[in-house]
Image (cartoon, rainbow, N blue to C red; front, side):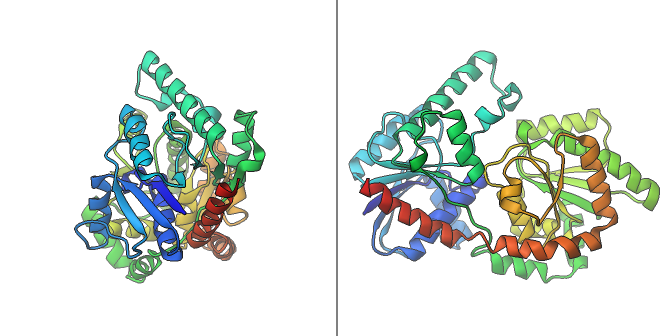
Length: 401
């Protein structure tokens, strides 16, 4: 088979999509030396990933993996023209789009991964910086593009049963027989580095964080985006109530670290925190330094994820594999993916969230003893290698149809 993968989301700036695409491509390169792969990447992606591997440019050890330049940003008019042109030249037997942004003029055999349907399940104009007219046009383009992906795909990968159900709920004409749930992974080639940083002393980690971020313990850690569905406004108000209680009982300050970026949505959240006079909320932005990121995980009391909608829930799994207690909203896909390995709260209730935060701070030792053994079992269910093998089998199955 000649398989093309549109891997332009591989750059780390894309968070979850980057993690998925990166692990898909590199795991396939490990397990498949039979088929030929065309990996569509931008120059920026090759340079960034090459540096992370100590190279000037990204290279694959597998000779069957060919890097194809595809200088087009996602979601733009250019990708609608450039990507089909590149694919028509390559003539792959099958193309895998790891996101729904399939060019609407491309009708050769392809499969699509759908991670979530946020704009269907969680429609809100607060999730955009565009004016009403531009937002309407963007929303129309989004629905047309994803509709094309759903209707024309030879097969659709849903990253959870929750996402698979949403596809059938929002696209009533979708063929359930071509929707396949393939879970993402947890762990991987970075496990050794995680262990390396975890073995350093707490004093060393705290000194580093104070130097780099002026951050003092104790703190609660959130890592992710700041879009409205991430539910961070409720989180800061819930934290405010819990931190006041902590201050009164302990006589010291509790902090909340919200990391992930410096875009419009983070700025809006930060402005809301300042306006509401909520103390001790820290915004370190996008944490590109691996050492700093690992230290943030390790020194946190626990990690918290109040999101109202997710497709898979990779961030909580990333926290669990670092041995952290995790608190999560009891809605969305979290119960499906995380089972009984995390503490749940009602994400729409500031009061319940605040009470769960206060309880976790107070009973941290006993909660870790109860939940972390379960977390180890949960993590074992998810493997990037397993995901790649199941995806490869789906490639074969899709071409048989």
